Image (tube, rainbow, N blue to C red; front, side, top):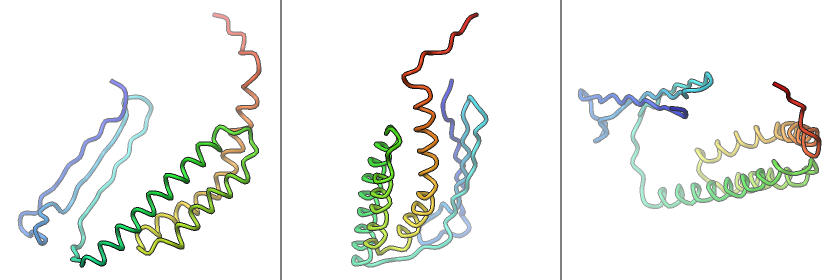
Length: 148
């Protein structure tokens, strides 16, 4: 069988229940049956906080704004990915989407994710440039003459 395989181990801390949250730690290991990709990670509950309805409303607004910005950002990147190499304006537009979202998002958790995307975005120009160059070398040319 090919494809990802995920194992998740959840540990229950029965000695100390955190305000009704009995699960404190989850460990995850993922691998695939082809290649050598193997990833591990741990999620641990370190605190519990109660928030009022106003906080929840602001958090939801930040989440909605983050999701909408990411959807639009990814749509632009998908167009850039198949472009002929003239994509500077589209990459600038994509970065502008993130910058606008960063200004509008109030929650620090979502701001942090947008900041990370903005940092990674600057490296995309060379990545897409190399990809376009490779496509230009391959598309429209005769296939290699393979003989067995």
